[in-house]
Image (cartoon, rainbow, N blue to C red; front, side):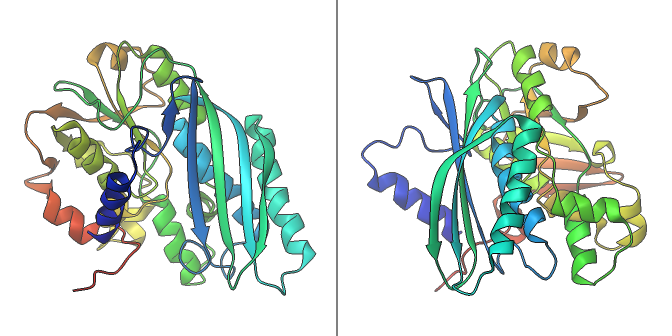
Length: 314
């Protein structure tokens, strides 16, 4: 997979790569988590389906979601915005209105950034959060016997995007999940506060199956899960009868949390907020039981199903 090749090349070229490997880098000497995401027009969003204020909210939310997955308290954002020369001032005002709205909700401050000219809109945000748990969070900390839990519903954002692309305005809940995602800050903090040792957690920015695969791969462990346990809106099955399972597993951009935690931590979690979907086992693949058959997620499945930023060139 070309993106992984690029990441491996970058890591090999850096003399100090100890902070790399997760969506957030933890600066242990400062007790801070740092993350950065970039959104590109016509790759990650389209102005045909998103208002500038929604785009502002979402561009901040995707970074705050990474902080949620590190069980940290969000503190600051820097915002770099590249815009075509003919961009109106109203766009900037509305965009930052969306940024400000989510910042006020989570008590986050914008402390700087950059503004440049470009052919299309590029949004790059850096988010900084403070560690609250005495234990560490990384995709590599899943241990045999850990309980795999998730928050929220899955497949809803991808379904909402599909409706937007078809210019269908029904099921506003699904559309809102795509346009105005909610970073699961408090739920991430709850896991951090109840942790009894280092634990694994990610968000589902690239899909539930993607997160399960990356946790499994980084931890050198297998995961056994039950498809019927995965929470999702029943309307998906009705509206997308042939594709709803793919939406749930691979749809992405739900920005929910997936964590592998010790049994003792799971017992303390609020079961109204967290759903058990599986267990960490010995091995290397993910097996999701689905009635009388198994869905196996391995290297081949991941290569076929995961979102690719770059085309493979022979």
